[in-house]
Image (cartoon, rainbow, N blue to C red; front, side):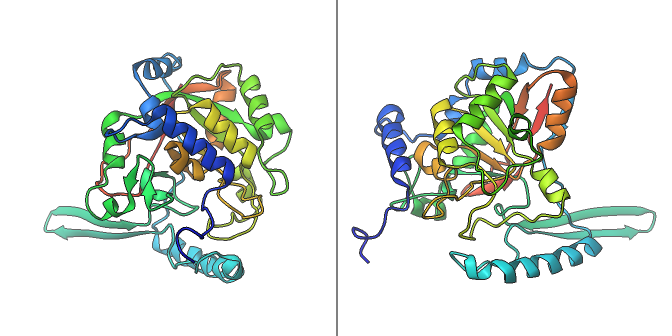
Length: 328
């Protein structure tokens, strides 16, 4: 197929959202930095005002690097790859989402010294990471617009976001709580109605630049022995569906922090929410650990806090492993 006859990689409604965003937010000669640009002084102060107890909770899943644990995880990964390979849109790579840690420690007389070299895949379904604008694109472009070719030379979204300062009010939206279930299931993707109900239960009015912490019960799902499906596999999975993705775009969030990803519950098995990275420049933090935060906020009698997400400023990075913190 030629470029003119290839199918649009974006779902039609995502293309409409992208076109509307371009008309409203893009200025000729100025590169759009997406949703993070909505985090201004007022958004940061709104977040600071939510800190009442001086407590903090990490939203990062632990990264396993202990040799004995890694051997067991490798066996599981091999089984999963064999199970899902036939359903994948591309060949599932070995080590997708992996972290390799080379520890260099030694004893020198009475002194000791340690150092290490880390190599990691910034994406996947395991490690908590921030997706940059150079992660999902269309028409040879990232959001901005930024040419895809710039990723080989001078793309700097992550650096810009790091220097901008991502700190804003975080609003916890507990979907299992409003549904009365332990976790979101494959046959019932998160909808706009679910998200409206969660906002009502939180008792807040969302404002542009807020961080949406969308808890879907992944920690309980995995504790029960279930395995989450990789993004390359073309089949539905627990997550947010089309109406939920459209709802997110309408709220103008500064970023979205979530545990389950896109439901892929559409005829093309397309990525409903990840498509917003291109359409509106949405900052996403994937694979977040939100169960402890939901419990902590519930005990404190609140649903809000100060969300701080400080990515490492790496030029040309498509994403970075990150430890988001929620202060309350």
